[in-house]
Length: 154
Image 1: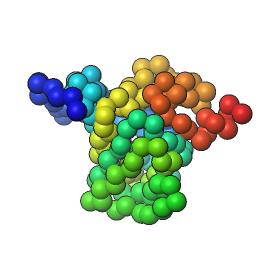
Image 2: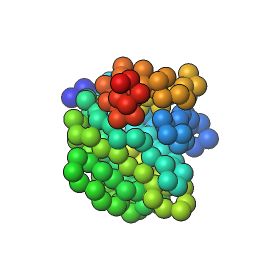
Image 3: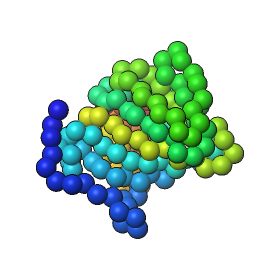
Image 4: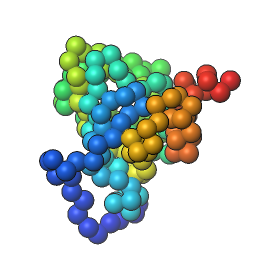
């Protein structure tokens, strides 16, 4: 595992804002570039009924902690609901998805290891990508296999 030697900080009112493929606001706290590849860290603020399409990471493990709301997760053949306080670890190479099933906006804190996937949110925000084929190009470069993308490209 790579190490890094400088503190990484994310201060209130100076957060880096980004956007998830499903339109949710994302706040980036740490990037692979800042942690010498060790991890990326962010928070996602998910409107009711929203979440990513089923997808598979080919590089990283994701860790989520539910802060607000109730999220429904699918990981391979497993399905479960995660209330505030729940921690969910999703392995690489296993198809998964999640969505906010509550009536209020949800919030999750996330870490990915190794880092790099957080770049997706930053690139969507910077490029203004909102069409599935635009997002698919970014995902493919980052090793993400998205079910919606597969359907579009068939």
